[in-house]
Image (cartoon, rainbow, N blue to C red; front, side, top):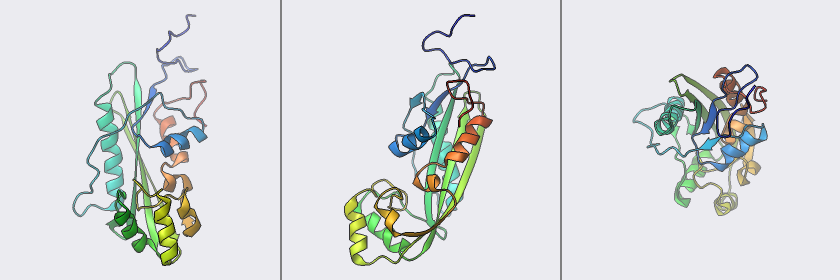
Length: 217
């Protein structure tokens, strides 16, 4: 039997070409999360889309739409051969039906912290997996997080840490904000940026296997 050429799709233990996995994200935390469970994308492509919510759009629906749009935006730039799977994700933090921004300024992060202080909020972490032949699978994990009541010093410390930049809701659970969370129900990895159990199941359902021929852990 001839071994696959360098650069060619890796054959699975069932004799089928393993699709190349493309992560539609420039987020280091998403790459790190996948690496924790042994999933290393073959390629990483940032998705350039308008991430603003539509008027009246519900938070969960917004997360699912944005994840799908990211997957499709990256897929449009890929060749059909070799076969590929695009994995994209989006995280929305909401207080009630109010969608909080992905904080870009200290003022935005401060506004988010004011809204989150002493309250529960929802984190909707959506996944989209799109194949080269047009198959699409979507998942969304809904988690609930509660912050303690933040005094001025705590708020300033969170802002000074700077790890809020670009984060949905203006905080990073894996950073300084871990010290102000009093309750979390749902998925820790989803709140950080990518629901790992669901990502594993989604990829397996779309036929992706790890390079060693075994299913992703």
